[in-house]
Amino acid sequence: MKTINKRQRSAGQRFPQKDAQPHDAMHEPGPRSMLDGQGDKIYGLIPVLEALRAGQRPIDSITIAEGARSERLRDLLVLAKQANVPVHRVPRVSLDRSLKATTHQGVVARTAAAQYREADELLELVAARVGTEQPPLLLGLDGIEDPRNFGAILRTAECAGVHGIFIPQRRAVGLTDAVAKAAAGAVEYVPIARASNLVRLIEQLKERNIWVVGAAREGPSNYTEWDWTLPSAIFLGSEGAGLHRLVRERCDTLVRIPVVGRLGSLNVSVAAGVLLYEVLRQRAAAGMK
Picture 1: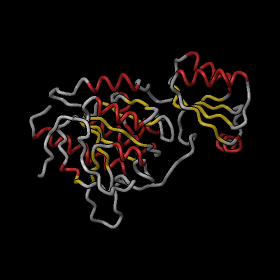
Picture 2: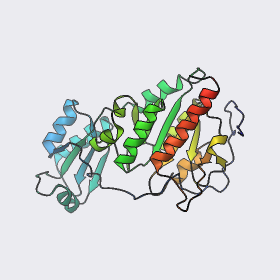
Picture 3: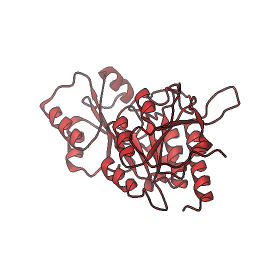
Picture 4: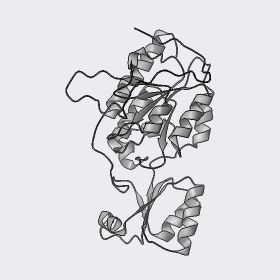
C-alpha cells in the first residue's frame, strides 16, 4: 500500500487537488421539502414562540410562510437566532399544501429527535485528541438531504468510533425522527453539531492540526493512499451535487473510491462506511486504539 508520509501541518503545506470536479462518492435524488418526514411539529406562532422561550424541547428548524407579519414574529426570529435554530421561509401555498387542513398561522417548528452539541464545544473536544493514542476522527456532511442516508451514516459512524459529526445549519436534513429511526439508536451516542459555515469550520479544523479530506469522484488519490492514522476529518457531499466548490477547494486533499461498474459512484452512506473502515484498518495495523 502506498501511504502518504505523516507531516506536521504548516502554512502552505497542502496536497495537490488537480482538476477535481464537484462530485463526491454518490449521486442520488436531490432536495426535499423542509417539512418532509415524520418528525413532531409545533404549529402556530404562540406555541412555537413559547417552545423557544421554555427551551425544554430541541427545535430542529422553523418554517415561516412568506409574507407573514406580526410584532411577535420579530421576537420569534430573535429567539431562534439566539438558540441557533435555522429559519426557512416558504410560499404560504407550499405550507398549506404540506400541512393540508392544519391551522398553522404561517409558522411551523419541527422538533429534533436529539439535542445538538454546540459547534465550538465539539470542536474543542475533538481537538484535545490531537497527539494522543486515539487521534480525532470526524465527519463533515455537506448538505445531506435524505434522512435515510443521514441515519445510515450515523449508525456506521457510531460503529466506527467517530468522535463527532458536523452538519450545516441550512439546506440539509437535521435530527428528525426519520433520521433517528434509520440510525438505530446512534443519535444517543454520536455528538452532532450544526455549523453556520462549513468553509470556516474547515479552517478551524486546520488550525487545530486536523487534516481535512474530501471524498470526490475525481480525487487525485485512492482512499487507501491517505494516511488515516493522522487526525482526520472526512467531508462527504450531498446526494445530487456532491461537495460544494468552496468546501472542496478548502480540503487538504481529495480522495476517490474506485468504481468499475457503469454507475460511477456509490451511495453516500456506503461511501462513508468504506472510508471509515479503512480508517479502522489502518489504525489497527498501527497498533492504535
